[in-house]
Length: 450
Ligand code: ADP
Ligand code: MG
Ligand code: ZN
Image (cartoon, rainbow, N blue to C red; front, side, top):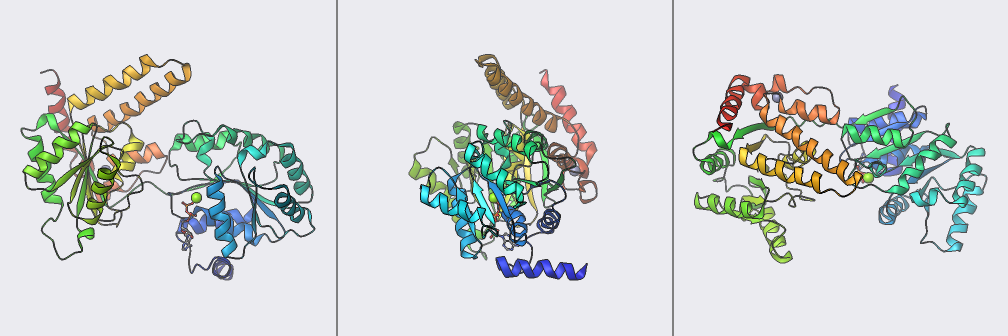
């Protein structure tokens, strides 16, 4: 099998110019996909190289074409341009094309040996008669290598970007049972993954390649504000202990920094003020700032002009800063998925970092109240279902905080992974010292009545 290994490496270099696979998982997925035996589901974070998982196999099936469903013309265009630079023939059929362009694409597909290796299509095209006819013809001539669904979470109402047109794809699966399907997404949720497989009617057993959610360099714990005499003082000590604020050897942008997430604008302001008063330079970020100020605060924090930003959850999308050593939630996050994502902005450089929830009765009750109101105010059944699901997500966070259970294992269960190695690595408060966590919870519960 050593020779076979070399062969794939050679193809990777020859067609895509890469010297190695980006990860073991990328390589394993590609090897499985090339076999064309089973349907494959790939769940890896954004930027981990999911496209290569189908592009390399598509290129290697020289007499065939892979059909790729993708939700946006802009995404298709990026991939097609990229492939063109690599001299791989990729085309598209979409509503923005002229009749002549479309004819040229179809003519190639109908030829004995099509040059097109990948054909990008929007899901709404899938239900047109023209496309149905084309697919029948290609299938009869055994010219289809794969049917690929990129951004596959779009098929799930539970995902964050549902597109009704994606639902039509499920019917295609049933009409062409012998073509292997590949679904790819960055969504890690077990719930959404199951729904994708169901909606697309993927053929069981589906081979799944998923990046495990366990981040061994993140230490998770929970602190109860109600148990503390001086919660802000506790927070500022935590920051001073975790961040090496005196280290001026590094470039400012590479110095330790932290994010304090708050539920309300008012809270971001008061956290920033009280930290500054305690000698920790901090600024607030929230949607109430005007665009210029918001961009300025974010940039200054990125550049390391001040180390700590206190922000609402609107902060962080697309923020890529390696040296975030600490993410604290001042209050209660609304869902496990959200908390995993927000806290996961810590330690991107792989160095040990800390994630902490400063839980409080008052914040818990405030969120509880708002989410219950959402349920009772929902006007339609589907809105009510959504609001109830939102409440259940929040209940999971309450359990996360009020139970002495390994924090990483809560994430692993949520995302459908095997239990993580936290017990031996001791990267959460529970695995480090379960007794004292239990005591802390007891104290919190016994204070609840007062
Ligand atoms: P995703 O779809 O998972 O968000 P992409 O497929 O867009 O990720 O890939 C992200 C980047 O990684 C692209 O610039 C791509 O060229 C690069 N990439 C993918 N595989 C490799 C590899 N084996 N070696 C180096 N770079 C890679
Ligand atoms: Mg992608
Ligand atoms: Zn643990």
